[in-house]
Length: 386
Ligand code: ADP
Ligand code: MG
Picture 1 (tube, rainbow, N blue to C red):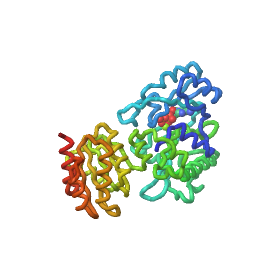
Picture 2: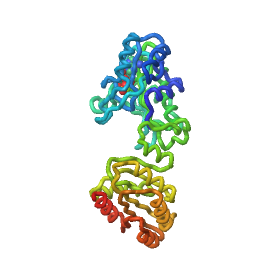
Picture 3: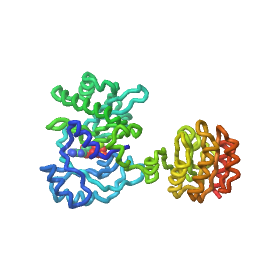
Picture 4: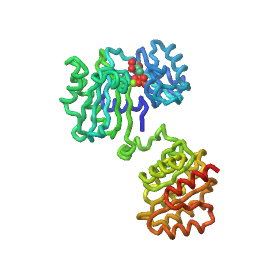
């Protein structure tokens, strides 16, 4: 789950990491004056709070010197759509604007912490080219980047933090502040189970080092360890995804038209691939988990059907611990409770599959049994096109 800049900055502040003075987030014009007052003296910066970088270049960051100009800038931002090179052609509506103090920038640096999957460690990445996307620096000036990995269990050691600071060309008197910044960020990264912490730019100012921008991505699989964030709705999740999360199902909406109901993530991915191979396009990834009982199947059908693009559903369930006849009976009860209105192909495999197939073919609910995944995929693709 991604956090907005102001949420990320409040995490940084809670760890004593310097940010510009925050005036808070403004959602209505009348909230501007108190926010400016909270910051104190201008100049101020107004920043569109959307989950995408590249806002500066797209006109989503405005520096103003007077409160009249702040008012005009806010009017320009609120409600407007912002398209940056990171929004993939879409535009995000600006509903929130962060007000903060403008920093006197001497230099802009790049700082981030990522998970280094190859090494199985965390890694700090720094570059002297701040305010610029790290991807373009990596292409154009790879020598301006230094990446150092560290063990999340022991944290970022002093000597590595110092090496990063000297690589950035910081004067010796600035090194202690940088070491403390880098180590606090590393501690935050590990304790909060982040998958990304990016400060771009980290600015060198007369008042010291200041995090001018902040991007934080929390690891969804670790949210249970952070109850405050677990309760928070993921702003990027669709209504169906939110509902699935509440029901404990792994669901990801896609842009095809064949709904998939599968037990096990690996089988769900294989199902999506096979649908594609048969010439169709999956409408979702859905893993109902190990126990595909009636209640979960009903929930799953409801969530799949929220998507109006769905023109057919493929159920692909392997009965290992749970026997196929039990699953078939759950499925039939679920079908009786939910009005499907689209063709349904069912492929079951595993223990007691013969009994299960018999139950399905004897039912009068109109589902189509399949022999094997390939048969199932072909059937649902052809039925959903009728
Ligand atoms: P994005 O990465 O989405 O473009 P940033 O927060 O990095 O947004 O802002 C873009 C640029 O605006 C920064 O590189 C910096 O030069 C400037 N900027 C952002 N916040 C401030 C601030 N508080 N004071 C001064 N300049 C700022
Ligand atoms: Mg930035």
